[in-house]
Each structure stands twice: as C-alpha cells, then as structure tokens.
Image 1 (cartoon, rainbow, N blue to C red):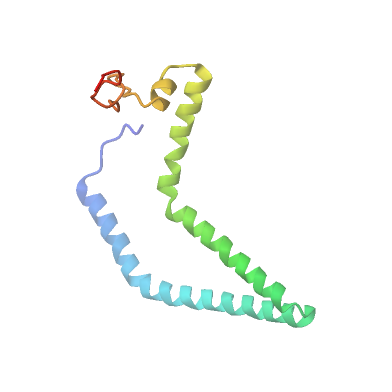
Image 2 (image 1 turned 135 degrees about the vertical axis):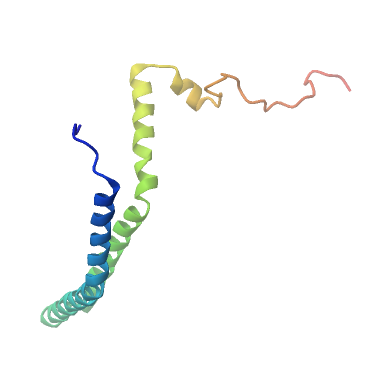
Length: 134
C-alpha cells in the first residue's frame, strides 16, 4: 500500500484530459487503419481459401470449414458477451461443492426449498384438511 501523499486532483484531471485528447486525436486514424488491416486480412484469408478449393477440388469441404470457423467465432462471441453472467456461476458452484465436501448444512437448506435465514419451509399445502368427511 502506498504511503506517500495522495496527488492533488489537478494532476489526475490533467492526466485524464491529456489521455482523452490523445484518444480524440488518433481515433479517426486508428479506425481507418483498423478497417484497412481487417479488410486486408479477410481478403488474404478468402484468397487462400479459394486457392485451396481450386487445388484440392473440394468446394463443399472448404465451405464447411468456413461454416465451422464462423460457428467457433460465434461461440467465442457468446462467451465474451455473457462473461459476467457465466463468471458468477463459478463462485456459486464452489460454495455448493465446498458445502457438500465439508458436510455443512447449507446444502440441505439450499436444495430443500427452505429459507436459509429463517429455516422455514414455504407453505405449499392446501388449507383444507385431507381427512375431513363431506
């Protein structure tokens, strides 16, 4: 933990302002070069796929390889898009596995439908007695 004094707000504000100014200055150039480089990579990839199709005479195989590549990219996109939701699964899973291994009672209350704070089962029975005669 740093022991020195906290810098005044003007230092941090000026650093942030300089960073934002640099971002706004170079952003159009970065976008143009990024689009150009991605277009060149896509053009080279499609050219390589076309040469591979011509030399092996396997059009269907090449199209299927492109479809599988697209599916892999979509799976990666789905994982990145839901990373926060997927990431919260692991601590919960760790707690449940830890409870099971340690033999603690929270697993029983977690899976039995009981409220863990009050230890009461929610009322799901009907209010009429089952042994009443009509």
